[in-house]
Image (cartoon, rainbow, N blue to C red; front, side, top):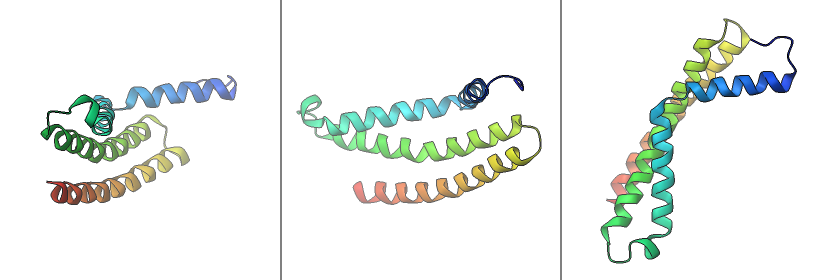
Length: 118
């Protein structure tokens, strides 16, 4: 890594490493979430004659929202795998463990919302 580079260059290199380690499914889930939220909020303008579109895009938003915490936790774990053992690796692993716990809660809430909406 760049040990003699300025802090801004090292942070940029680390951010690029993290972006490269994000699973491709996370980008698809993020795109599905944005697509679902936009279509749900612009339902009357985009889909005035399709009553089922609102339920479809609401479900797409909820499912995509349930996937993102799991993929974020996986990203934390992948970042920790690239770091040498020490404080930062342990910190990223603990962040991953906390994110997996949050993903469990988010999935449970998402399933409840899906059951109520449908």
